[in-house]
Image 1 (cartoon, one colour):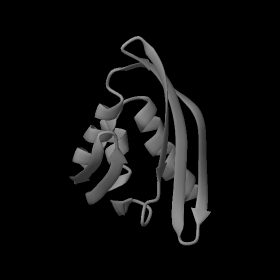
Image 2 (cartoon, one colour; image 1 turned 90 degrees about the vertical axis):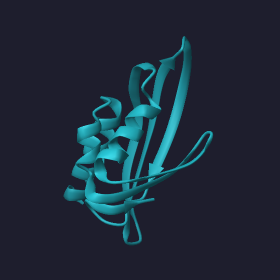
Image 3 (spheres, helix red, strand yellow; image 1 turned 135 degrees about the vertical axis):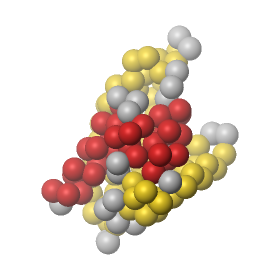
Image 4 (cartoon, one colour; image 1 turned 120 degrees about the vertical axis):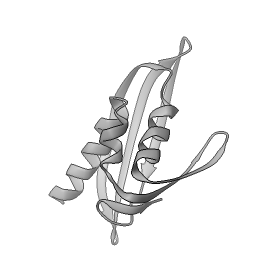
Length: 110
């Protein structure tokens, strides 16, 4: 579970600090990100593209703060969840995210 926590912490810290490179390091170079966000589904291939799109989701948030996080195993998958809070365009918001990579340094994240 130590490697799991390292991966999860790297991902979450990267999101909170808007560090696309730190997020990309959690993906295999040819990894795939699939996400369902408003206004609809998003898919990116490649670690760099995944890191950049995740950072873009919170680009207008100032500040962005971590409210809660958890890392667990669900069968053979790692389950990472986190709640963020921030202010965007003068309005407070909360955001919850969950991800289940297929493996550590995953080629695909779902």
